[in-house]
Length: 446
Ligand code: PFF
Ligand code: NA
Image (cartoon, rainbow, N blue to C red):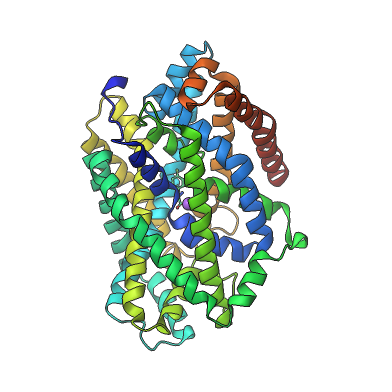
């Protein structure tokens, strides 16, 4: 069974696939609005700290398990548990991951659908000449329209599942290759433009002046959850990709490159968006609509603005596409691993996610007043609890398995490092990442 799995065709392909998984809505949409809602620089500082102390070592742990197991996450965990002579119940961690990605993908698809809508609007020139207030109003009108929300969500799920059904090597690898460098290019241009706007100074001040007073337990928890979310760690989704990793590649090098890129994209996006926010006197804690309101305003001042804006949403769409494919993969590979045809598995999973995603798509209109937990509507619920709580819990269990349970030989081989680096990684996971995650989770939940 394990020998029949596909392999990424090159080292570069693996790095691109993991980068594709990591760079997405988390960087461009979620990072700015979470920073806005969580006190600016305090959140940024904690987020970078968590990426380095938790995200990086746990990302290595997760991919390493997939690579050592060479099976879908549940089966890989069961296999490695057998090998280490411990309970096979570890496999339920794979199921927990699948549940996590299920809910994440269900709202991810809805928001990615917004970029389809905005791509079309930009190309049609719908934002030309609108005041900031009118841009905000048109976003709200869009949210309140159940049909348009459902349509874009449906389209995005179709895009995602058709690539997943085709198998990963041929679809995503090629798309990533061409589109991601373009996205970085356009973000750099945007950030360069932001430097020339009057709000740039205020944005830099707000992002980078340490503000310890703003740190509360909820800010700490959100920053930790975001570090996991943005790196795609804790849901066994990278574990699924690790199973396709070539033998000779060094895992830590690949992971460092991805994390660095991920932080860079978030910072560029933050600088661009907050410069516009402060230039036009908008509210940094605007929430999930932040990017969709600020960018049309920003581009309205630029020569050829609508073309740029359209290009931006096109590339964002590609970035979210490569992430959503990663979100779907652990669920699909779980079914494929138990004998399903890939195309059927993709159709079933895609339909279920689509169905539950409708609850998010309608959370701004028909279902706006349906509260699931406390004051939260469905969209708010699934866009906060799975990223901020399920991912850290999943990451924690993955780390425990990798650093305490799995056999040492298998771990060393799958990490692809020498004994010294292995000990350093293991020490970091055992005595820093694991305890830190436990402390933050416990303090903020209790
Ligand atoms: N890392 C993706 C982003 O930043 O948009 C989101 C994501 C992908 C989260 C895959 C979790 C995951 F398993
Ligand atoms: Na990300």
